[in-house]
Length: 146
Image 1 (cartoon, rainbow, N blue to C red):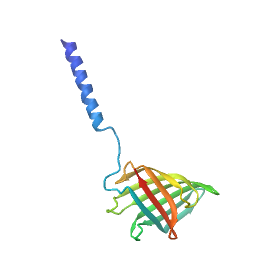
Image 2 (tube, one colour):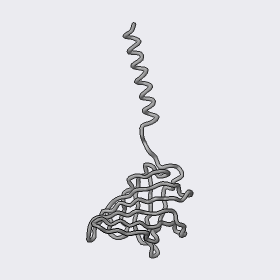
Image 3 (spheres, rainbow, N blue to C red):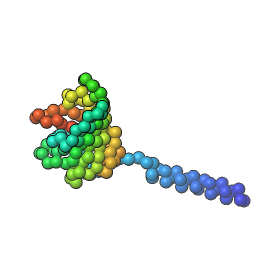
Image 4 (cartoon, one colour):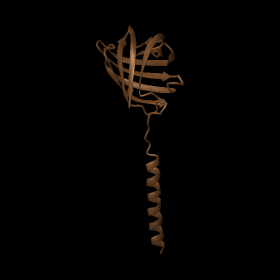
């Protein structure tokens, strides 16, 4: 009798835990408030540092010129190929407050794509790409988030 109760309790526990695991699998998704496709333009440089690792902080704005946050650009390399990691800090409520992280090989705003590797806040768990280009004389970062 005790064995049947123990087996029954074990089976019930396993079923309950599998249901809970199904509810909280740890998956992250981009928040509904965050736009899937948008463009940011790099504006005024706030600070620059170079000691083997280039760090640039700059303002970012929408096409209309409204400032929506800042970026921290970190790069290593030389010549025609630089490895960059960019952290976009978006502070605009309408776009969704949070950060987006992108990384990849930079070759000079010629349409190269960086991988979006994550984010926080409205952009938690973000994936997709950022395309770097020059549009109307401004450095454009066009996001396509999945």
